[in-house]
Image 1 (cartoon, rainbow, N blue to C red):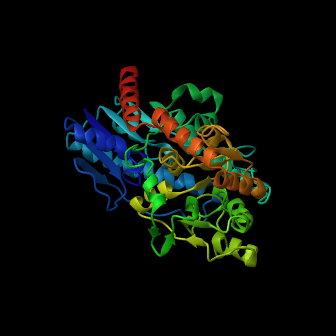
Image 2 (cartoon, helix red, strand yellow; image 1 turned 90 degrees about the vertical axis):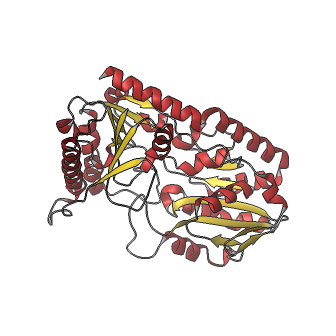
Image 3 (cartoon, rainbow, N blue to C red; image 1 turned 30 degrees about the vertical axis):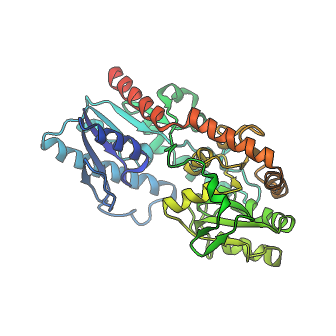
Length: 407
């Protein structure tokens, strides 16, 4: 078959599928994206570049849509060049979020399309208005609604949609949900597998040494920010460290902002460490920034208690990988996490806004060995049952077949 993939940041969410298809050795795979240095054998890449940025004076609520229209235009132009060279795909697979797919039906009107639909924004539920510490400015609501412009055009375009979780599907309007299939993403169960031996020897991560006699508490996010509960996590640490002198904490993540409002200056790491002051023993709390994948994977396997918190928003890949690694997880009782973690079955759930409850959960895992072992075994077992990469790829191919057959 001939596949055309589209994602501005190659390979995006399509890494595992593209690898799978190229390894089969019987498909032609072309990928349209902006230029970057990523390489996958067997993939022919076609680049586009935005001709300009946002027009000065464009209304803030319309700026994102203007960029989406520009992307749609440039991707369609790139696709026309491919078509002129004789490339006719059997299916187009891409991410709807940046508008790149909007005009492709003009170039390939008879080609079925399978679009990744990540999140539909609301002004009255889910992430907006969730955190009372950061009350929303009603002046922001038009911008939130405008973020759905591409979503709405995509839902009225040709093709079918897919999304990774029931929670994400639930964010979309009722009238659209029949056009969206839930395709649960898989993880590499061999790479993300428990390794008890790491707890029986010195564990060195960059310049941080964790001895076998210490308990390791871990937290991972792309960036350290409120959307991923960093403020709640930090406020739980003084009590955890006070009650467990043998505990050491490793925090993974950058100082930027991936989601939510940007700060005028500084970063949340600086803000929270300043807020906690002398209550936080920084000799036992280590901010290691962003890690290479192998170091990150080993960290999850060594973790004694892993914290994962999020607003009602898209769940991170790290949650799936922590389950597969057999982590004892303390998670927030928010929709995205509840889809993966059942309280006291394969992890513990605590209120997102309650640092004391979070500290209770972490301390319970550190102090109760039988509970920790039971949660770890269940986490791994659930990952094997629901997060198999093999099942994910088979289901993906089946959905591709159904999309083509229905076109």
